[in-house]
Length: 135
Image (cartoon, rainbow, N blue to C red; front, side, top):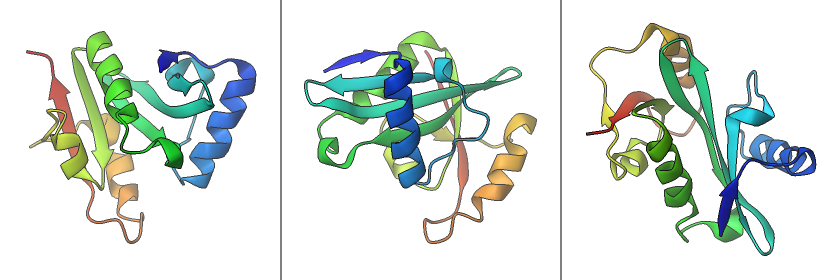
């Protein structure tokens, strides 16, 4: 499995997959994404959306046939090696807690709107804002 920036053609695949998964694709650009590729093609993708002083893990998607094979770990760890602090808004906090993310006490102003909109993600649970910090 290799991780790298997508090509233009691969980015089109990312957009299709992310839309099918109903992931956050607001104000995207190709340079925000890192992707994991197997010999079969796209396995997963992750996006950092820098909002002022906040680096938000805004989008994480794993292609169904590659789930539970460490692709998410590979992509999250790549981000953790690049950034000293990462925020996210999630309705699946248990997943991210395993990577050292913790619920914040104060929501950064850059994420308040997304947090409020996350309440509209019907059927997934209550949204939380989390942060990971390098030690």
